[in-house]
Length: 264
Image (cartoon, rainbow, N blue to C red; front, side, top):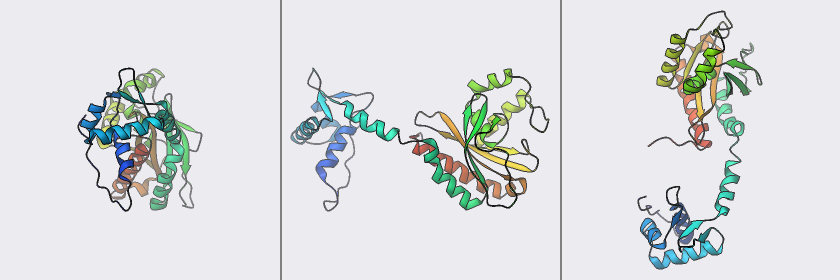
């Protein structure tokens, strides 16, 4: 691990010793759960005297402890603090602000959908204010993973594990009576991954279109999908691209709130 870069500290607003203490805690990682004072001096760039005083303080307050070899390691107090943060990352809560923003900006139905076996269940929905309702999916109801915006977005990311189960369940037939064969479905899934979002045009309900983008958790697992749904006429170009870009950005925002980190 390279040396941690020093932060710019404003003496009027920042306490330098607190910043240094946090930097020392950040020096521990999965690969180096135990560190000697010499290793910490090298990683953090502080003098040995300063490092020793901070370590002693962190040990006194219960954040660090000594090992049998004299090295330092973090205590379970750090885990307890992290657990309280992780426990607050409720998917529906983290998605609500993004969904509200998308609904206000575009006035289309906005869905939050989660996988459930070979189907996708609607977890939350914000309806459009349009006088004519478009309800292809309501809260608690589900669709098979091979149709619709959000379900296809999920299946595209879970193809290796869920597509064999889906194919073995029997013929894939849409609500409109159209059969979907394996080569066609695999091509749709590949296009969805390359594009970054799914496009559904009247495969669930006549005159209705949808877009779907996947949401990932901190382990980079696809855990949900965000979707726009509405009248097909409202999803023509160039508005479709505008909707898709906003949807992908919204899904990325929720993913980050769940701990997902983009690859460098």
